[in-house]
Image 1 (tube, rainbow, N blue to C red):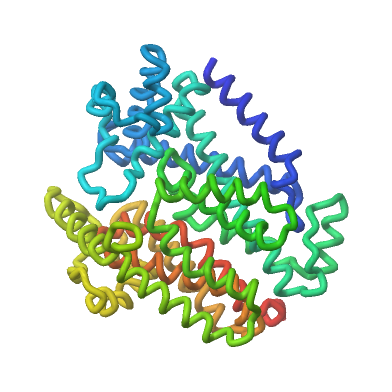
Image 2: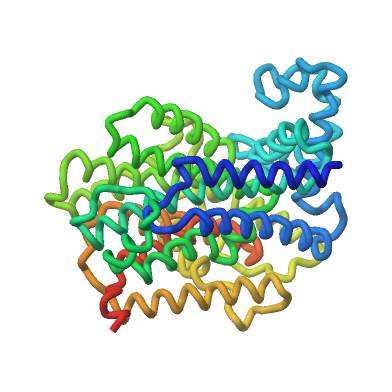
Length: 453
């Protein structure tokens, strides 16, 4: 019965994608958009298989821990619906009698929080809500997660489909969804290479495809981040503001309770886009440098502003990660990284090596299993993209504010990940949210006319 339900939900989602204006594209026909979603769901099934076959028992595999904890929260619905509501929403969720559920969960309580939100609870709550519709079938949870992750990535695709069209073909700066004559539209605009490259770099970097498809934090993260960026862009461009403000009001808090550092990494780029949007591109470089300086100052003096010290968080997170890794019997992808001190000098000195460590490792010389092979293969793709960019570099879009959003986000997220992560397997997972923006930045900087020649 539950598998018939899975087919029904899949059909309903495909119908929704087909008829919703949000999923219309100026470049891709609807059958391609629907196919990308199906591939996304297949990616979620692959995650399930990998975690079943290669990641040990049910108690040590993330997707099963979060799924089982969601079932524990769901069980309260039949005993006391108010308790279920409290735990799912967090409103009154600290009531003493709820501890019996939290103690039963394996991942509700984290050893290390650094004064921030516990992001485990976000995906556990997702499973507790999805359980209302799934009859306990984990693949239905995977379907739902694949859909919301696809939706977030689609928001990113829509934003940069528009910006790349605008950057490469300024005369076509009126955004038009796909119509029956979309093939003529694509041919006239000569957008053939970008047409296929853009969805590939947004959806199909191996790490993005894998880690954001299953019942993991990254799926919710990509939904929240994609919706935040898309509606931020629409808020700047559209005269109808209310809907976009509401969506930002939903996406930003969801991002905070999913992966706080993603929002931190995105803020300088978003601020820069705002500045250019309202004050123009005059003194472009000065404005960019000013935003970076402001970011460093606010990071250093974060405690009086948000109540936590950003340098302390970085140093403590790295120390706890290293300590935890050392406590395990064997971690095949463990690497040695310089220990941070909670001060600006230590962070700045170690940042360049941290960035390049995230960018290029694991290398082909560090392959030890299938997962490390895929990560090394992905890094070869990244190296190839950078080489193509160097050979076909153009300054045509160098003053595009969204290019610099991509660059700032990639550099900051890669650096933060490299500073705190002593395990290559985890590093691959943490850098996944930035990979679409790395590919998009390359697309801004490549002369595609020369590539055709």
